[in-house]
Length: 308
Image 1 (cartoon, one colour):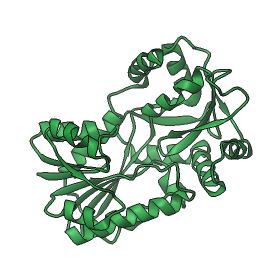
Image 2: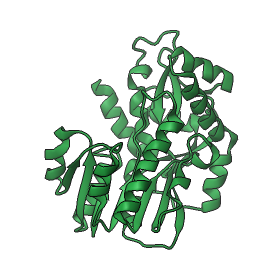
Image 3: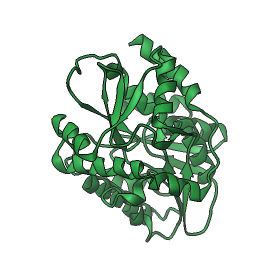
Image 4: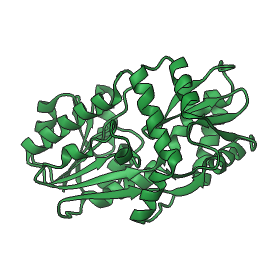
């Protein structure tokens, strides 16, 4: 099959590309960075250098493809996250329609249907194609964003933001605490990008009718259980994940100088997770859990943590 992978060589797209190449597919990887060209070629794939904001580029890249995997990278400079997501999703939808693509796999988030400003899944409804929406839980790899904060570098008395699987969390390094308006004993589904890549690879070669939704997770834990696993791996077994109120979370994001509309959207996302509705939807779909557990990832995290 001829398969297009967007997302450059990110945490999902790189292992996905490797899986598909090993399976014998002709893979094209979309990247906005010309410096990735050689690396993509070394993986056995074809680079397509351009921006997902360019509909003509996307259309030409998608033409003749048997299947396309689409994802929208988060932007930390867009003041209105919802508007940005809609614009990029519309670009994909238009290009896929013009290219006549028949199999589409879309990366979304497990809280997307609960947060109106973030949900762009409906923009793929009008396509004459088989569409699967992937709803993964919270990425393990986003713990990497917390390394400097856990070590307490320059964060005394301040709140800083970090990306957390399309959501955000707060962390203060002085006391070794994870913070957010979800946390504590809230139960969360965490996921390895490797398990997401495996699931996407499975979906790309299928052709179910209409639109389908697939949830993806690796392990269900409370936030404090997750914090302890990460903390134990770095000799900080006391690491806790403190639950903030929505108001406290919003104040922290504003202190980090995020645009007000963006901050409000991020608080809404985390509130959906704290409510338990995301977990309820996950359980209703009864997805099979992936193979990579947080303890496995924690070993990789610790190796990176101690090198910093």
